[in-house]
Amino acid sequence: GAGVSQSPSNKVTEKGKDVELRCDPISGHTALYWYRQSLGQGLEFLIYFQGNSAPDKSGLPSDRFSAERTGGSVSTLTIQRTQQEDSAVYLCASSSISNLYEQYFGPGTRLTVT
Amino acid sequence: RKEVEQDPGPFNVPEGATVAFNCTYSNSASQSFFWYRQDCRKEPKLLMSVYSSGNEDGRFTAQLNRASQYISLLIRDSKLSDSATYLCVVNLQRDNQAGTALIFGKGTTLSVSS
Image (cartoon, rainbow over all chains, first blue to last red; front, side, top):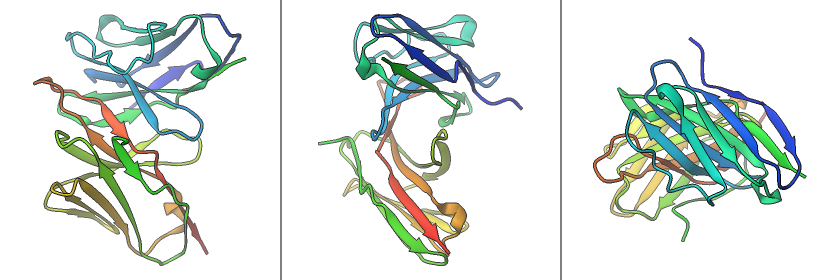
C-alpha cells in the first residue's frame, strides 16, 4: 500500500516568510508525528497527534511553529516568520494503533531559509 | 547530558566482519527501545525492537541493560548493503497516553567495504 507522503519535497523560502508543510499518513494510522533533522544533528521530535486526543506539542521549538491534523488524517506543519536556523529536513511519521512504536517515515521536506 | 548518546563513528569494516554499536540513554522512565537504520539522504526505517531478554533477527542481535541504561546492536557477517547510519532510539511514556514520541540518538555510521 501507499506509504507516508509529504509535500513539497523541497522548499526554499526567504527569511521572514511563512511556510506550510503537508503530510499524508498511511491510511488507517491513528498516530502522526513531526520530526526535524538538521545537518549533522539527530532527529528532533516536534509534535504528535494520537486519534482525537490533544496533540503533544512539547517538542515545538518556538511559538512560530504550529501544526494541525484535520479529519484525523492529513497534517500541516506551519512555520511563521521563518529564520535561517529553521533550515532542516522535516520528517513526518505515522503508526497504527496495533503497534504505535513502529513509526513509518515519509521522505521529508527539505526546507532552506535564505 | 544528551538523552540518547552514541559513538558517531564512522566504523569502517571489511565484508564479513562483526561490528558492535553501543548506546546509552539518560531517562530511566524510557520503556521501549529500538534500532532504526537511515541510508544517506533517506528517511529512517525500523530495523528492530530491543527487548530486555535480548533478541536476534538473522545477522542482527540487540541487547538491553536497563540497570546500566545501555543498548547494543551486533551485526555479524557484515554485507556491503549494511552500510548506513544506525540510530539508537528510545520511547518516552508520557502519562498514561498510548502513542509516544521517539527520542533519537545522532546515529553511528557504518561503512562496509569489499
